[in-house]
Length: 547
Image (cartoon, rainbow, N blue to C red; front, side, top):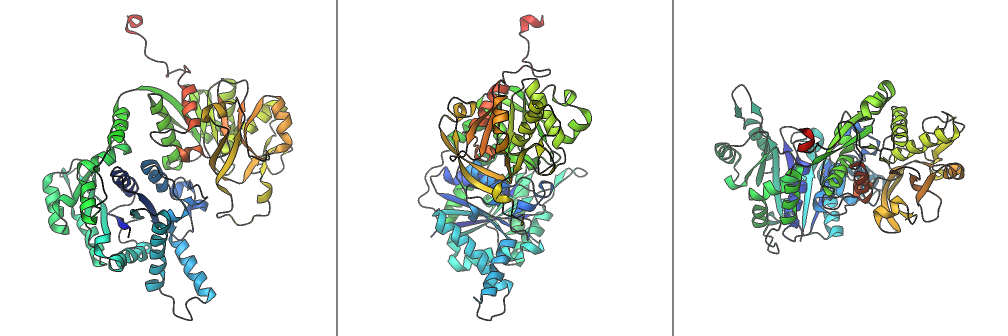
């Protein structure tokens, strides 16, 4: 029987449950235990696919095409495993499934209630993941905070699990914030006490409490939490704020969390922890390195979580080249108002990520033009590829009218158009081209050199695609189609022939990047960018020259 670890959060949201769960997975995998992870989101949306990035951050796409919470990206990066649609469960999915069963008559005329019908459906999702993944340990994060109305069915379901499968097979971990009062210069435990009391009120006694804090946690605070929350002192784990999220597995392991989990769940197959590679990664991250300036031109830059995976993929690639990522956040609408020179002049590389809607598009087009005309390395992702094609088409056709039909349905030059299979689609949720698709690479192209193979699989999330009517015209002008679908129908990667490094892809390579294995396109993008000398990006002068 698999073991289950349920992780809840208290006091405030965004306290770091997702990174904590991912780190716990890293710790357990270092002991040669198989792990899978699940995120429970209490909102009524079926998935975050139709939600604004300002509301929810990025939408992470799994290989099987599920639009999920961004925490799944952290799970994959930390645990180095590929998750599926089973790893993200929302209230919308649960209630939809229960209502569908009721409409079919599955309940034989019974009254449908939150307990037992909704909670049973939730528990079935736990067991389905365990059965399909065959993992020894299932980590399950409950989104939101204890006390949220919409989260109560999930909490009731995880309470029932201890009775269903036995106390020795379930562990409850509570992540909570210790706020710091500057007026009295002390950390306060009362919010944690109230949070734990709320859990206990519904029948859940935490086995482990992980205390988040921006300041060091004194031993007296750990004693107090242990006493008032009825948790062993060794099970009160301090987790201070650190400069890099990749330090967290090492901090938790050093605090004894890994051995505590092994002991409490009786994981007899667990080996001695080996985090040597992770430790080496963190040491490299902490070592001062020469910066590489990358401008990320997006329309949601006010919330950096909108581009979480892109940011991490850039960090992985910069580390590979022994560089420090200096990420310049550029709002595409600012480029429309203020021009490119002042905002992009220090950029050694420009990246334009995905997005939807017309807002800020012309600023992105300006960024692509700046990269092309100034020979600055450029990487376009999804929308970033479409923008690159639009800009190049305007240059080739000597007209400002080439566009995507998403932004201008009446453009005489629809170089980007709706996928044919999308033209009859009316519903917005879960209907895009989603998940892994194959891509055949052109031998000798920059893309083929980056991947080092001829066929790759990448994750997609889009409705619009390169319009084949313009293939010949743009190819003659120097646009290279370096990645196509195996049937040759869809342009997946394009690059400029007469440019040092200008490559774009219709898919999302950022989802496949790992700390120790950066994605090939990001790796070669940073490799090209680091060779560019720009204002504010030059290496320091030798001492002799300074004198």
